[in-house]
Image 1: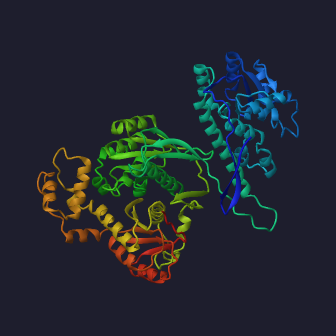
Image 2: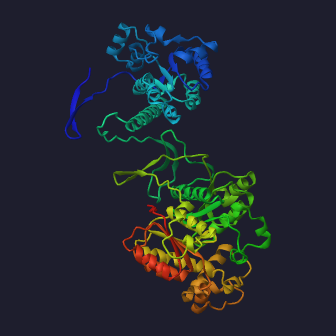
Image 3: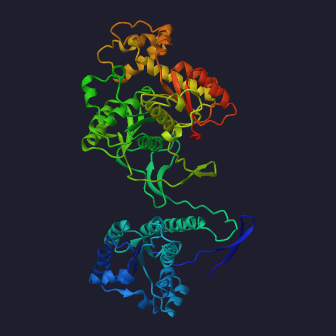
Amino acid sequence: KYLQLSTSINNHTMVNILTAVQGSQSDVVPIRRALISVSDKTDIVSLATYLSEKHNTELLSTGGTAKKLREAGLKVIDVSEYTGSPECLDGRVKTLHPKVHGGLLGVRGNEVHEKEMKENGIGMIDLTILNLYPFEATVAKGGSFEQCIENIDIGGPSMLRSTAKNHISTTIVTAPSQYPLLQATLEKHGGTTLSIRKQFACAAFALSASYDSAIANWFSQQPLGTEEEAPKPVVTRVYNHEFPLKYGCNPHQKPASISSVGAKPLPFQILNGVPGYINLLDAVNAYQLVKELREATDLPAASSFKHVSPAGAAVAVPLTDVEKQAYEITAEKSATLTPVALAYLRARNADPMCSFGDFAAVSDIVDEPTAKILKVEVSDGIVAPGYTPEALAILKKKKGGKFIVLEATKDYVPEEREYREVYGMTFSQKRNDVLITKDHMTNVVTQNGSSDKGGMSDSAVRDMIVSSICIKYTQSNSVGFAKNGMMVGVGAGQQSRVDCVKLASKKVHTWFLRQHPKVLGLKFKEGVKRQDRVNARVRYIEGDFTPEERVRWEAQFDSVPESLSAEEKDAFMKTLEDVTLTSDAFFPFRDSIDHASKTGVKYVVQPGGSVLDGEVTKACDEYGMAMCHTGVRLFHH
């Protein structure tokens, strides 16, 4: 009947490989007999009625499904009657019978199979419709070990695999979502096509793999009840394809797609636009950041992301009059700012050049004022827990209707362990689910800021939380500066920590110098676009024009502005105070503190743990800074 082939795999283990069993093949197979056993009875009566009335299909069923179909007036044969064997062992044995599996596995057109089926009274079963016992739901509801074991389906997966294996002739249906396609195919062709049978078989094997994966993963976490060490589990992961992407990080990286994990939904749904690979990386990181800021500060929060690091992040803190000028917020517009709009306005203005083409995230429902701010900014998309109808209508029109709008899945909780595949290896780790709060800011190691010196102000603690959570979602090494509830400089992805400080400090200088009277007084020609004004102010502050660049820059003004001298910049920077500096890991040397002293830093927060912590603390004391050790490193890669 078959040829046994021996092959060597995995440390020379010998296995036997079977040759294919031959038979006839038909594209369209009529459904003369169907076996139906479902726990999810959605639309099953209408489908069974269609099969019985339109295709004269004989219906086999079990238990509650048979009862429901009979109540609808359908003629149903119990599987126990069909097999001649009663259900037994508390229902554990219902369909495990040769007349069931022989009817599913028998190869049509194979003389030996057909002869044996006839001799044993086995009829062909053309269609199986089933669901599996709700094992994962039982575990999720906190079922006991014994209850979880009882909800491991045996008969269902067996029929599923038998039907799917013999998909050349038999059709397996495992979800109500497949019913419309099945019915449409039957209506058009009078039977199922090979293409549909393959499609359904693929889905069935994926379901089987997912189901067994959930059981194996759960079982591996159970205690053995002995002192023996449990064997290291084989981790099985099931990814469900959700939608394709145009490409991955780069246009040549095709194909690309997004999948959900196991039975969990995606953490968002798409309301508008077509997100790309990097858009979604930005979105999921940005949303985690604002969600944690909201939880830790009890204030609406927002972030502006580019290439998987925040260009800015903020909570809703009222603007000063000078900030309103620098961010081009008129008195009329200021009066309309809601807390959510205020948070995004601050996040966007931390580094408006880097935020060009950002992906935004906010912690609260997006309202119309927030949508109106986004409307005038160059941005790729936004993720939020929801949108007012007015806000959604505005955002859907942005970028000619291509603006990406994602709605976060309510109460979404990611798995505790996360996985990443790189160059043939799978990395796994416990998710970094630590929430930075004010409780992390109590270990003050400097002379300033200690309880006997009056402690930290509420605004200082707030800025420490904002900067720490922001840095948690910034590519390491990273440091960040915060003031007034917003990031004012982020230094990401540098190998040297002091270089992170220098990079972020430069951004702080630019942010603060945008408030210099000369910058606020720049007179642009009418018609110069908003982003061009932003860029022109930054270049005015930097001042390092090439001759060709200066010509184009000067053309944007009614009259050529007087230069902003180095002395004027230095003098203005000396007025900056109460800035917070956060680092994702300890400062190995005092050089970062020395450099930060030029940027108005009064508060420092870092994990601590360096052999030179004493020197770093001494440097803070010399500059009159207050420093906390959180004890939590926040590397992000």
